[in-house]
Length: 454
Picture 1: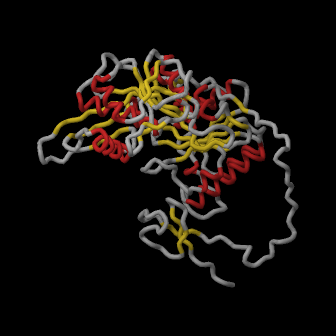
Picture 2: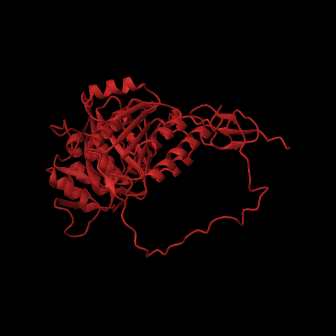
Picture 3: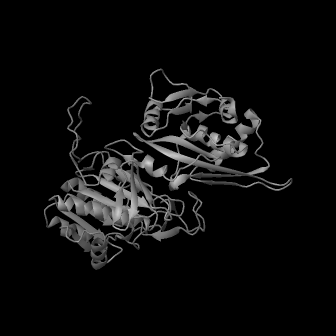
């Protein structure tokens, strides 16, 4: 019998190596390769061309029923999911430690249990009494929610198979689960992959919605193999700064709905509270206009959200090295925008420190924020406040052009609904929006408006 070869698996990316190395050749992470038991390869010794079962094909025009959804009782959670939990779906939720993942899922499971459906909450990180104490602090101790503390997937599946399939099963967290069919400690690539596969298969066979809580790495990505995100139906990220009370639930992948949908929550003493109008939340505290402050109508999925962008410039003595600090936006995008302002508009930022902040702990990825950031930078440099009733949006090219962005009408309607009577941005079609729009084709036009040429 041929002795099986050793196999080393990277715990960060799942890459394979035939020998141990200090650095993973695939993801360049250090000290992540660990030895795991080799898998048996049957395809090398057996003919798999026969003996199987015929696959059934269907045409594209075959009628398909929409999957039924179950409301969780948290409107913002349902919105991020695309309308609610789909029966038999697998959801993976990641987020920084202490951000509120367990609190949110405990509240959602309790609401489902209070509606008359069966819900199960299984914790591998806390004892059952700890979960019950947290439920008591949240005022959920009267909910008929079933709580257990377990880490063995075999025990969990045996217990679930002996009862009527619940509507929701929460596993907190997948990195603590362990399968006795696989060698390795909990949290390793092979254990996470095997445990997730068994739990997802249970969801498909029973029709229960399974939510897996996932740890995140230091760069914010979900820990474990990338194949885990491909196995599940929905990948969600719970974001926010621990120093802020606001939390954002963002859908990164959704096989049953749109991606980039968000739900907004505020952390309070009684748990997470829903924020029905996030624009008012992120614009709270604005009083008199100050230099360096611009309002941007962001779009997350189908939801418009008005965000305040703050900029500050500080002149330095000759020869000093200026600093660029960014919170909530891409630092590379800021460097590009500063270069465009210098090359196309003749502004001098090379001798000034630049600080940029997105208020409320919000993180922007929308390229339409370019014009709002540029307006805030020019306002801070000139020490002249922008119009209090105006919002700014538009993508800026390297040539200094203000390019059109998607869903301009939705952005303008949200601005008008909150009392902003003027919008600045790229040209839009006639009749779009309800606010008075000023079209800006080039970035120098934006600078002229701020400098008082309006």
